Image 1 (cartoon, rainbow over the protein chains, first blue to last red):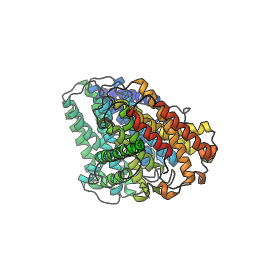
Image 2: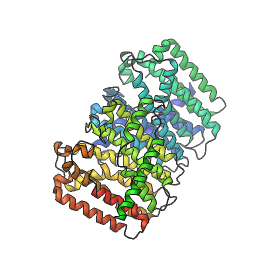
Image 3: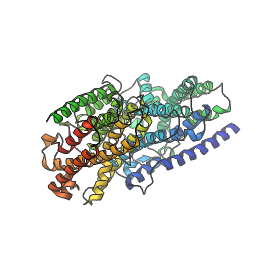
Image 4: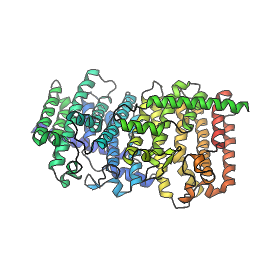
Length: 295
Length: 295
């Protein structure tokens, strides 16, 4: 109980922190081009669970460095995530009108602006990383660029497009999600580790495994929620997977087995962190949050 | 005559070089996701004048470094340029079916793939820069990210969208183009300068001025060609500016004064380089090429 309360405090403190870092990183609405900057702020600020930023801060704690040094990584990965949501919602992709309980960016503005918002948010993510004094900043750029591109998140979207209406094997489904959401969750975690002046390979390997578990758990929970929660609770359109005849962990395993998988991934993550003390508490709390979230 | 021949040889050698570097940087068509990688290669390879890559190589020569060290910058800036063309051609932007004499990416593939192609090409540009051993690589990332984003190329597109159908002042038109095309031409040049182990501030300032002249000249020539050349010669749809009631240097100054402006920018560029020997020949040749091109 105490442990859960302490994590909730840590999480809300770092969510607020990420929001402030993002608000500073984004150009103001009075900066030319005003409409684009207003739309970028609309797409990024004031919503979202900031799971990726939290992973970055939590991994930085385990790596023994400060939140200050992890700010750039946390902002960068949230900017990439926000860009992907803006582009995914567009009519030529998922065509979704609702995001975080508000009209999605292209509904609030227009398609052309949404396209440019996503493009410019991606650039801004790399600006954030390149402007820090973090010694491993170039390594961070390399990691995030790879996780974002065709062998990461964008590649996963492409596989997803090719897969709609087809029944995927579990292995193909896992590959798709490793690209589509797993790569960025892994990058978020490792960005935190590389915020330190120096990072041991053994720590990178451990966080690599932790974040792969979390990436998979995150997606399975997403599939469960899409099948069981309502639109208002989610803040985005529910029940879309079944409507679009997408292969999901729920369609493949059923709700019960999907839930069992999530619990097993949670336990594995705790075991990975078993050798650490309180410096791993944030990562433990995030694992629990990802596996038990209801929205 | 000899001078022009030598430049043509240099240009074609370095165009071929850029093409080879790009072909190696782009994942193969057999790499998952195959369709996305095929579309990325379609959008980037086998066309284009590679002016931005040439600027990068030429500036590297003036900065006293090798083409090897400038390869990453040359590829990165061409990837950003290619991404912008793919997104600009999409139905929600300029809605153009033709690019470099071929169907544009969304016509050859589909809108969703074109969206992802652009996104993934941007990521790949930063992968190229981050994977080099160039000592000033982080500076290069910073420069390119800024030139690409909302205070650079993407911002220029946004200003352009807001300006269609309005009559712009010359000053507003110049601001728009500084963002839309100027920023990336400047970045191309300075990426070359930062390919060196160390770059003198005086050289950066000189190349900054040179590239601003070139950016402006490039746009004015573009406007002249759009008004005077035919679609087949351009490899893209001609006469679009007038059709879309866009403010251009031709609509604002008339053809004759626009031509005079280009000649004046050319002379200014030569003067900037007057203190250098043959190490500036490539930059002189590019200036002439940009100002005298017919397509």
